[in-house]
Image (cartoon, rainbow, N blue to C red; front, side):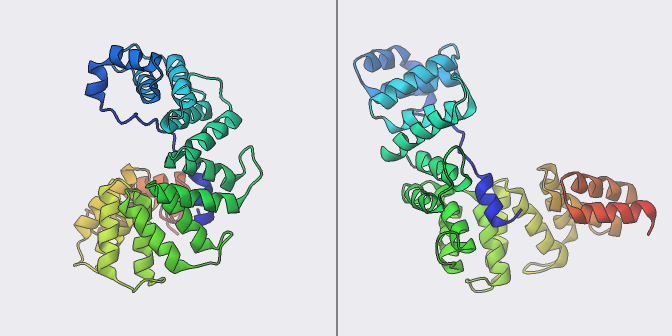
Length: 307
């Protein structure tokens, strides 16, 4: 999958956000929030929506959640608009309606909720129910990034690296990938690590690459684990340690990363870091192939036929 495809794959952040209230506090005060909501306090309506969506100290009821999120949104509480947009996007508690989702994402973004800006940017980038408009996507990714949404920074990085509606600028891309990585979007750490491997608009630095791959892997970004495993397998930037490499390949493969599975198959085939075992090699080559990794498919066929 190329970077442009990745941009389109990151469609929406389908995660409901709380109204700044921790779960235990919300659980202790449901009637207080209900009374405040009835008096027109929009954040309290948003908190009630979240409680009903999650079933926190009330019987879970996504229909009620949608009603309270709508009330919060009508009161100009941007998180309520965002959450209602997610519910329309997923068809949870309301009839699925992408156009309604877009409407509420726009309200959320206009109200200062960066997740709304990101989701709206993704809609324009992909052309979902609206004409594709990369210029709008670029602007909205910028608003999301400026508002602290790491995915917005990632979107900007992809657009600058690919030159989508901006002059191609790998240096700017690296800066946005770094901001996304520091903001907690682990795939961006992996991407930035790869730039340090190749020296693309950053100084080639194996140590920086290792640190970024490790951060990504620790954050359960499985390609980061695979990339870190390959560094250990070949001894690039670190002391060669095939046992550590195998542990990382296994972690990546367990997370359904095809490169991790293919690499684990190779380790078993060569007997590096594990006891040589062609049966296990076939197993992991096959899994890599199932995950659409061509090298896994090729190695499976070669080992199976002995050619």
